Image (cartoon, rainbow, N blue to C red; front, side, top):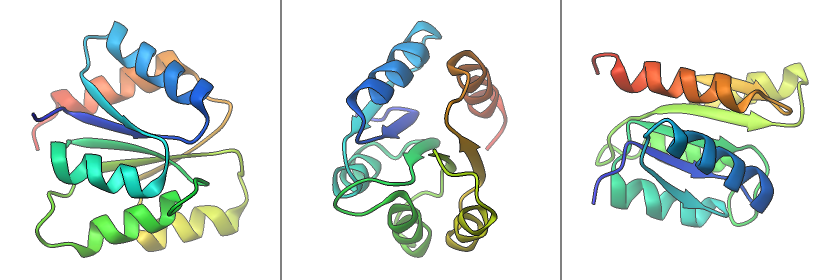
Length: 124
């Protein structure tokens, strides 16, 4: 089954907040609690958008994005990275692995939903 968005975060609270917020906008999602599970969901669902926590067990968001960008058999979704760190070194690292957007926590769930909806409505 294909879903348009995969969300990966090891914080159950943040994961549930994002999933609830997106579902209220009618957006179907698949979720993951760590990096390895995120890659499984991405391979399984071929999403248009991936939302990754920077720091997760079993492969952080940077590792997931690097693997995703390096795999020619995977579609190349829009990757949004969420992190509690706003350091320039983290932004640079995210750019180097192919992250499209870097958002710091705390974030506005409503603004995230609106942005994801815009991404999904735009031509590929």
